[in-house]
Length: 265
Image (cartoon, rainbow, N blue to C red; front, side, top):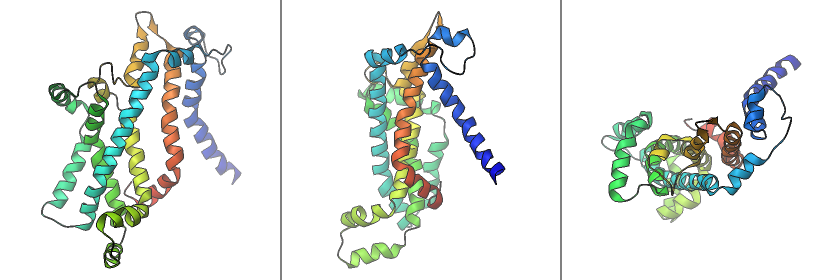
């Protein structure tokens, strides 16, 4: 039993090693990183983090990313909830074909939509705004959220709806006070995946922004210069990008466990 227990321990250490290496590099200068292999920083420096927290170009990159990612998650969940309810509770002409068509949007690479989105948002004045990136990511996140939520809603008996109507509940009251708490694990899982995709997506976010809404992923490309990469600064920025995702996982960790057990995921 002890030998079997060592296998997952070594596996977790193997998975965490790149993260540790990234954090360790963030406390080194670029010259120290290039000097040679060292498991621990010989000289700890906070200059990399100081640059990020004092340079508006850097810290506004994080703020911009958090704004459009949060906006996209809220929009995706609010749109996906009624759509998923309709697919799970009603049968109509072409429902299966429409449901499959939603998933095909998720299968397409983001590069296919970069130019159409750029021309469309430039013509309507949405270019370089947080809303532009949030709406663009909805093309991928809403189908995914509908797919996840429909699986959870399909597991809730229809008798629950009928009982609520008999008791005099209006549909909005029933949906908010009874139905949503029943599928809260699915909502948590859907929100988690929407947040993660929007947070790590770079192509659309970089194409649809310039200065005012430039995300941190695009800002990180400025570490490259004719002299090479500022590796320490890049590592510090990468370390900070892990924190929002870790926070989201912490708050929805219980829902994720239930979601993988009960939903389609």
